[in-house]
Image (tube, rainbow, N blue to C red):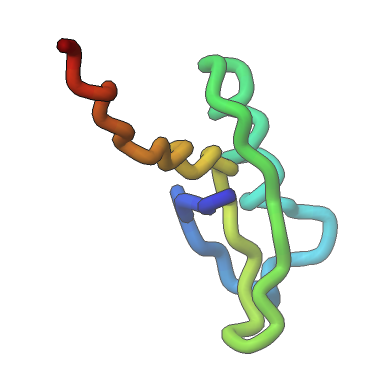
Length: 66
């Protein structure tokens, strides 16, 4: 699965205020399956959408007809 980051929010927001959750909630109301994850390396909350990677199919040629 691939993730697309829709928005980043710093982790040090004001107490009782959750801008990443609010943003993700607004996207979910629009039908986008957004969720919030924590990026420890950058100390930020990320609003992401999971996307399935396209399935690779092997191209098999049909046997020759006689």
